[in-house]
Length: 452
Image (cartoon, rainbow, N blue to C red; front, side, top):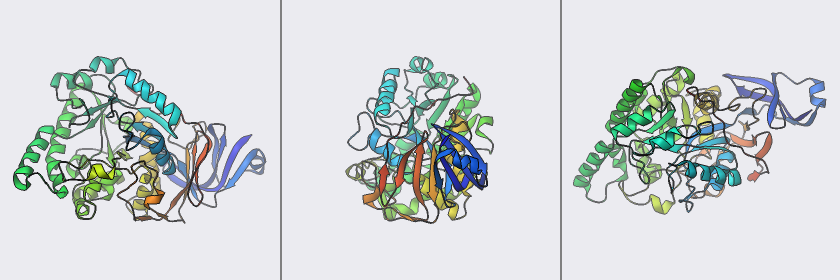
């Protein structure tokens, strides 16, 4: 007997949208089909849900978030940010290692796993972070529950800048996915020096894309790609921000590529013209750049050169975002609205809703070899999102769930609404004139890496 049967639905999955049904039994999808379910299937289901042609799609998998726990929980924590993720249709996340202490030991990784088991509202995994001297730790880690190794080629929290050539060669030789923050630290420092000569200690935030420049991104990415080709590394380039980098890539399935990439929703949404309006609220590393950069990144999503769309969700308090280009904190919260942003861009004609599901659910599952998630398929975990294309969503400060309490999207109106989210077969969230969370169980992600 099925526990839940969704029918009269618009199922968005596998590059298609079709009128159909989806059934859940326990934690798993037990059936998916076109048209209406048989009378026998309806009778053999404990609960039937008429979706009235609303969309049902697989839950979003976000491969890059910073939930700030441990050590930075005054601005965010695993509980608050995973609830924001859940309300946004994100059912799985992969958290980055630049917290305090950084996740550069197996013990620190286990601590985060234990924290997530107690407090995460969605499924979870944690990257291992590289340093100049922890290659032996990285080589001995169990990657069946670890997405890969994160390498900061630009400075970050603690000792996580990796700039030793021998260490980089060893990391790229591990045979694991190596994900990079790709900016050249030397170029950035030189740009800061020039900006301070011109402006003194108060460099306008609008200068941020000149400091974190196209040249800094491209120089670092060219080196990383060259090193990956030399060592046969599965390289994953995070948060692309430039047209030049997008032009280095080629279309294809993630499973066929040695080098894959991610773009974040803010680089698809904002441009440098928005600094005048939003200031440091759109200050990220890498920087939001020109309209030409944004438009080429959109084209690279549409044609398959870029493999994943994510958030780089990185909350800071508004007080930490104050100051000039060299002092205001970089990063911001977007995970609650990333799916809405992508669906809005689909409505504007940049791609179809099928592309949204491909980039935010299917491709992350394929790229990382995530076991039985990312698709609406029989035998897969029932991580599902119900979207109402006939109801608007207005972003207000009162509606935000992130602990930092603000968003650069405040005041924006989106043309659809996330109405319900299911995690491992249980309804975990519903919109009912506000956010409503229900008891459910989240799980660690399991990875079948193709190089293992």
